[in-house]
Amino acid sequence: MQAAAPTTAIPPSDLTLGLLAGGRASRLGGLDKAWLLRDGQPQVLSLAQRYAAQASAVLVSANRDPDRYAAHGLRAVPDLRPDLGPLGGLQALATACATPWLLTLPVDALDPPEDLLARLSVAGAHGACAIDADGVQPLFALWRVVALRPVLAQALAHGRLSVQALQTELGMARVRCDGLRFGNLNTREDLAAAGIDAPLCD
Picture 1 (tube, rainbow, N blue to C red):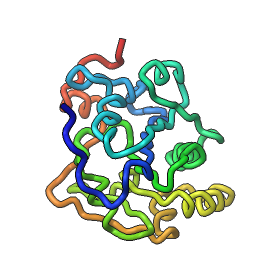
Picture 2 (cartoon, rainbow, N blue to C red):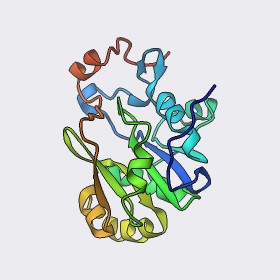
Picture 3 (tube, rainbow, N blue to C red):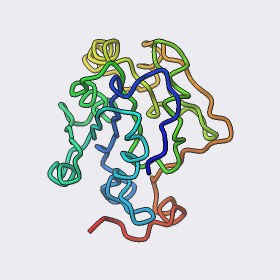
């Protein structure tokens, strides 16, 4: 039986979960982080399931293997323009998003709290990003889509690729998640520490 979703001001019908999986993972030799196995479960499926009860849709910003995502009931959306970093993935998600709110997480997140949405949604009408024990985590964020789209378009048109600068322009709050470390998978050492043996899902 699925656990009840944490209490939040945003109903599932108003929220899309967006997983950022379009990076090149250059420090990991180009491994596709979305399909790295942890405890027998691919990263992308683990995160999608963790927040499934809180959102009406799940999108994955991904630039390869769309059929692989489709086989698991996930919709992959590729970058509209290449080489824009995280903002390219955010643009793809915002364009495809059909709900007023978008909750984003990087697909290599290890231990984001299940109540992340609840924490961010009480921070105000302009959205918010999280701060964990390692500092500001701009990709763990709740975005108001109607505000995001035009500001993001302007930023990209002028070559401004900073996620934090975009959030400042949008007036987004920062929410402290004291005592928590979300974690990520950037190096071989990170893989080993997370207990990931196989580099890719078969």
